Length: 188
Image 1 (cartoon, rainbow, N blue to C red):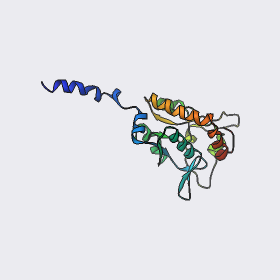
Image 2 (tube, helix red, strand yellow):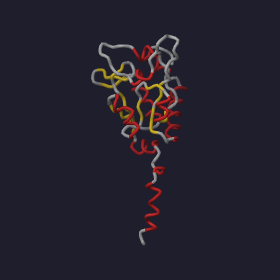
Image 3 (cartoon, rainbow, N blue to C red):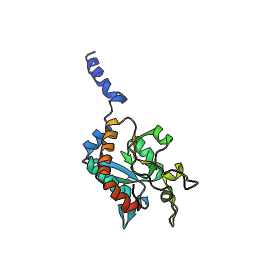
């Protein structure tokens, strides 16, 4: 019976509600783990063996605003969202459009871009699957632009606030606009 009070004190720690907030984990590690496919220019791709593109630079800016380093993890489409859901990655920045299905599984950042759907669906010399392409197939030019967001595990309101605030600072000072013009050739 001497152990019962100690066990009772540990019960709240075993509760799923007692899990650490994602922002605390990110700060403790000093890095934001960002999943990308690295196969879709101009969003994220490898050039001379180096990861680059619109979303790579955006991820670096966001990590900088959160005062941590960006740790990019190249993965495939099958692991991208499931890895975020399981906690393997903190976020996926991979031209992912907001859909009702995405909202059911994840919390998301504010919209960071609304590129022309033709830019997302354009063909290279080698076909590459897009996370976007599965949820957004424009049939005519009057179709609205997709809203690109950054998904992360549900139940992390402090992380959402931190991520959205970082994104807002990047928008407000014009860096997001410059990034859009550089990589997407258009105003955001």
